[in-house]
Image 1: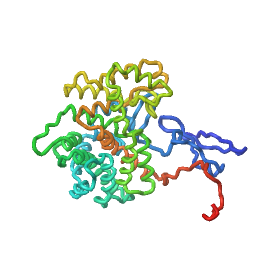
Image 2 (image 1 turned 90 degrees about the vertical axis):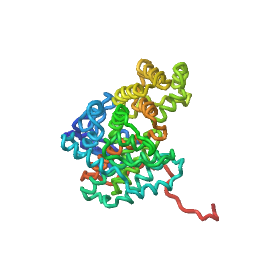
Image 3 (image 1 turned 180 degrees about the vertical axis):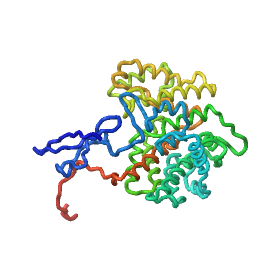
Length: 429
């Protein structure tokens, strides 16, 4: 940390504030004692200029289009590694050795089964329940089934809970899918790798053998890597805030899933797919481009731009390649959605309107098409996001619990309501 300082003057009172520097990225002004020294708070809706914590997990440079996990570029992790390798990296800080990876994979694969009573728990949901509603309830319910790993002060219990969630959330996700389509649950298989096992639980049926397509398994594994963590986004901040109260880890992850369900967060790929379907054909694109440019038209192009990235989303490049691989493997030719997507991308990269506003295609732009081609309904898109992001939430939660400077989250407010006034009896109102 540097010894730089900044100053702020309020009503003639000037106070010095320490400025901290990370290994990379912008400096931050430490305002922890601002209220005590000035009697004033800061006002930052959406916390867009506020660092809520110190973290060594993920770094994003939105202007340059950079995403690093523990210093490793997302492009390299997605191209050369697998999802569980990324999980290990996020949890422990380093890539595993061959022996460490074998041990980690073994431990995850042998925690994939959920308590048999969970099957009866699912029967309490309506058949037409949204899979994300089922996920919020079932993940939160894990605390009732595995209360031997809810003591957050016990390092061993924290790790057991972490392993359980990485292993069991895919099982619960597959169960949620099977439940909503009326098919029997499929038990996990220890002989399959993490992503192949998930595909088998989603698409296998008892009456015939399901053959894992290695191209699809690799594609989904890459999708999981791309969504594993994304710094202090809304759902991760929710997990940290819930965890700051001392809540058990299962409840914290359930809170993250609830936040992820929002269409502005995890539902963006579903929204992008619906937009492509609404446009329908390449011929109609100019009409929708005009609507997007019209300030008085409520229509918005989904899948373009990002809250953080002001450059091309680095995950989108990998997702585009993955999308083409899946469509080619499945023999999908002349896909109207893909044709619309390709033309929209071309326009976005060359049209001055998009360039000036830095509205580049993001990861959601391609992931919706890819998941649809793989056979997942749109209602499952955010569930798959939750499966991938679970490890990021856990790593962030674990880091927060082990950080001695962390306190219970308590944002301040700018109060604009009525000042103090006296109560008036109902007979005189």
